[in-house]
Image: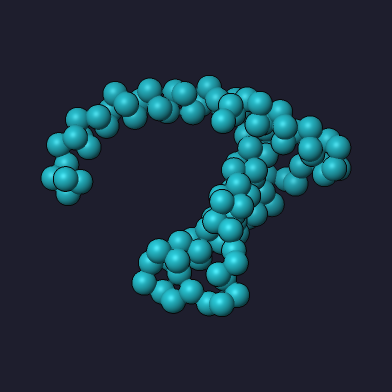
Length: 108
């Protein structure tokens, strides 16, 4: 996934269908709600909680895509090039965390 193109696609969608971006606080609340929906599916499908019949048809991929959509909205409206930020974070994690995870006995 190219984040720059994804940010542009979200911005185009907002311009054509969404009237305008929700404000940052509204989008943050929406992001929290979407992450909660992801957590609910994972807790019930992969965790120890039983899955309700009404939750069995929920699509985890769709819910994760909702999270990505709102993150892209927040990046757009705050002027962040998420591709640049992501690439920078991956380089940092590769440098900082490589040996830490390789040497973690809990992961073996």
